[in-house]
Length: 349
Image 1: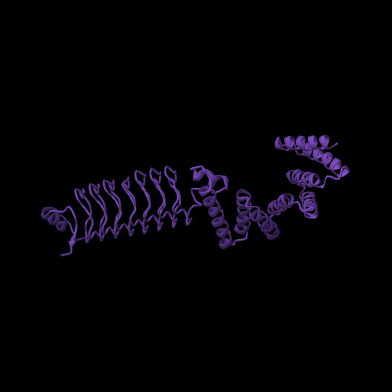
Image 2: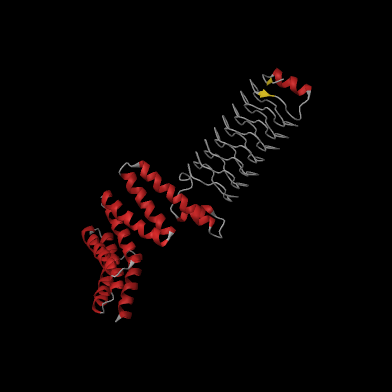
């Protein structure tokens, strides 16, 4: 008999996947009847959960909720933690479906308690995503943001304990959208070389000490991001917004053409041979930076601070040097100094 019941259960799954919800419902009801006859309570619970899913797909939410509640009660009776978690998730989903967000939150919080105990990170992320949606629907943005930060922390944990080098794949598997969900995230000390985050919102993101070599960051919003001591060799930052970003000690031997670096901190950064054509470096702090052979043509360096910077063979053609402060620079001749002063630069004696 159990074989017959299991076949009905599998048949129902196949029918459900093909959108044949009424047929799936009948198959699962037959399976449930047999499981009850042979007193297999664990599989009774599985069948009840499936029947509830079929009712929900058919728009009968009342019957769906009744099945999910029966599954929950049964799972708790036999101490089936996985069944209990499944029932709680189904109840949370069902209440989200009818926009009863408070009830959904109550069940999802219980679901998360179980998944946290089992350390099933992907299931945790699934519950957190649903919980985030519920809080957003209620206008509780702070709580929704907390959920997102927890999901990001899970992505980091999985990445650090996984053999894969594809952080984006992990993030997407947790239902994160890299184009918007990494803003303000802690992505410090990670190996993210080759990562594609072009046009992504990375405002306030922490990339401190991370490896971003060869990363695609074209047009990315990195406003106020922490990129201190990050490796960005041959990354593409063309057109990126790095205003007020912390790039202290960063290795920026890369393409920064047209980037907005206004107000950024670039002290002791390595910009050797960097391509900065037409970039905005107004009010940037470049103290102690290495600008050897850097292409600074057409750059806006108004009110920039370049004390102690190495400007050996740097190309300042067409650059705006109004009130740019120089002093104790390596690689500067008297002739170059005079030319810079004539163009508005200020030199400390």
